[in-house]
Amino acid sequence: MRKIRSRKPISIDLDHMKTLHEEAIEQLELMKTTLEAAEHAKDTMRDNLDNMSVDHWNAYMDVLHMICMHDDAMNAILKKFGMKMRDDSFENKERQFGIRRSLLLFLLMALIRRHRRVVYVYSLRGEPMNDYLKDSLTMEREHMADLISMIHNSL
Image 1 (cartoon, rainbow, N blue to C red):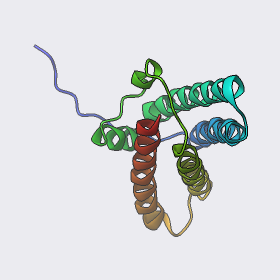
Image 2: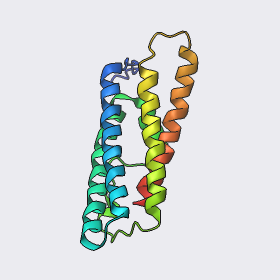
Image 3: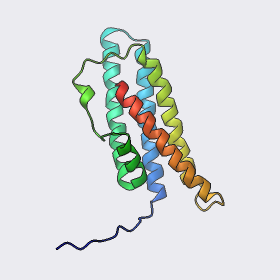
C-alpha cells in the first residue's frame, strides 16, 4: 500500500530561474537574427538560415523544459495549451516560412519581452508589491504560453 504524501511547495531559486530565462532570451534572439537574415537571403542560404532558426527554437524548447521543471505554474499553463516540450512534428515537413517570417519576428519580439519581464519580476524579491507581482507573473506565464503555442504552430 502506498502512502499518500502531500506535495510541499518548493521555493524557486530565483537566481537560477533568472539564468534560465536569460538563456531562453539568448536562444530567441539568435532565432530572430537568423530569421531576419533569411528575409534577405535566397535559395540554399535561406534554407540554411531557416534550419538554423528551427535549431534555435529546439534549443529554446529545451531551456523551456528546464524552466518548467522548476516552475510548476508555467508547466501547468503550457499543458493547458497542449504543448509538448519537444514536439518535433514540424521537422519532417517541408518548411515554407515565406510571408509568416515577419509574423514570426513580431511574435519572437513579444516572447523575448515577456521573458525579460519575468527576469525583472524575479529581481524584485521582497518588494512591497509582492501580491501584484505574483498576479503579474501568472498573466506573463499565460501570455508566454500563448505566444509559444503560436510560434510553434507556425513552424
